[in-house]
Amino acid sequence: MTTPTSILILAAGQGTRMRSSLPKVLQPLAGRPLLSHVLETARTLDPHRLVVVYGHGGDRVREAFPETDIRWVHQAEQRGTGHAVQVALPETDADDRVLILYGDVPLVRGETVRRLLTQLDEGADLVILTAALKSPTGYGRILRDDSGRVQRIVEEKDASDSERRVNEVNTGIMAARSRDFTRWLSKVTNDNAQGEFYLTDCVALANTEGRRVEAVVGHEAIELMGVNDKRQLAEQERAYQRREAERLMVQGVTVIDPSRLDVRGEVEAGRDVCLDVNVILQGRVKLGEGAQVGAGCVIIDSEIGPGVQILPHTVIEGAVIGAGASVGPFARIRPGTHTDSNAKIGNFVEVKNARVGEGSKINHLSYVGDSELGRDVNIGAGTITCNYDGANKHKTIIGDRAFIGSNTALVAPLTVGEGATIGAGTTLNKDAPPGELTVARAKAITIPGWKRPVKKPKE
Ligand code: UD1
Ligand code: CA
Image (cartoon, rainbow, N blue to C red; front, side, top):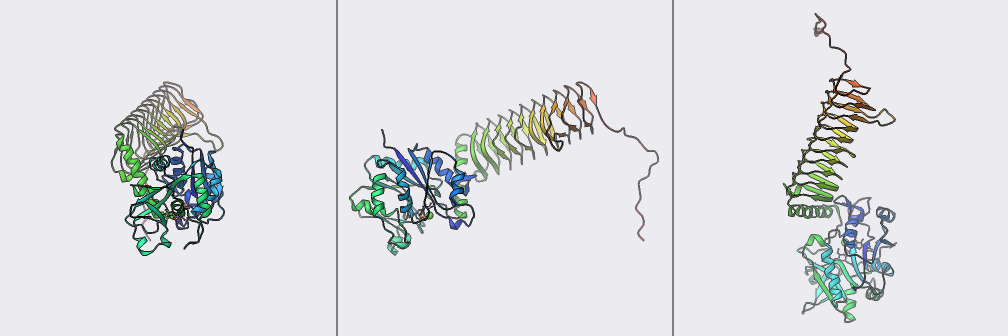
């Protein structure tokens, strides 16, 4: 059996450079807080303890994560990364392997940090994750001896000119056994340029004790980068989106322009799905084989069947769209909509909490809400289900093969029978029997000799 892993996530910093009233770790990346990405990665390691050190914006941060597997440790005063780890260590067991992650380093991969734990198991006492950067400014630098062994880490502000020329930096992520961290941190002082207790000083202390310090060198800079301001947040967002687009393309999805796709949730896509530009997929989205999503569509928590065509600028939320259906352009499909196969919903149509049967059509300019439509129903342009009486919502039921003429107002609750026809312009306030024409309309009359008004001459 391997030793249990405790994961400490440092998230107490202010994030002043965000210039935001929202605490840094709650800033959204792909539609959810930075911290939630780190928690997700941490959970893939199956930790025995998951500890978050919080401080600034404390209650808001805690409230955003009601999950019960998190142990919250409050660091009232931010006295440095070493101090942050020190206050969290009592939540771990002395034998635990402790992995330090950061609430503002959201894209680190599980497989990368797993390499640190593997090194611990293979005999290292302290393992740090480093990266070689073209512009290392601002980061702690890794100082190695002639044989390449890591000696210590020097913070930018404490570094000499020659030390600043080192381009291997500390990502901050590291791992050691709990009892070792406890011992090292009890010896760390704040005698440095920033007057802080540096976690990074553990490296020199471990070496002094003759312990084995190892470095894992990460490859992908973006994965190891922290988010300090809105520019870095945007860079990380793009990096995240590139990963998501690549993941989908590897599965056989055609992404017309990977830089113009935004995934803010979990997407499952069949083969030959095609996503045109500026599509946003949010929450849980399932796209059946061969589904086509046009430019500028937003799809939220929905299931799109195989072969469905979503035409440009359509918004779909909380809906199930059956195989072969066509929706849009410019349609709005709201929660509780369920269309059966081959339904057709056209431009400027809003559908809410409605079942639309197989082959039924709502082609133009309509509102259909709280309704049940059978199969092969035809809803004429400008039809409105008047589902709301100002106090309560009522249901409209339309039978198979009914034909609703253009500009009909269906005053719910009511039922239109199978095969019924409703004349254009009808305000229907009673049930319409099956198979018959029902029409409520003043008869058109012709007024003989009527003259159009003419413009009065200007005085
Ligand atoms: C730290 C490292 C530096 C590394 C860099 C990588 C130290 C001393 N330095 O520097 O070597 O290159 O990260 O990004 O560790 N935090 C707390 N409590 C505190 C202080 C910090 O929770 O008292 C958290 C912050 O919220 C943040 C993280 O720790 O998530 C890093 O703190 P920060 O002050 O940004 O450290 P850096 O100066 O960037
Ligand atoms: Ca930082």
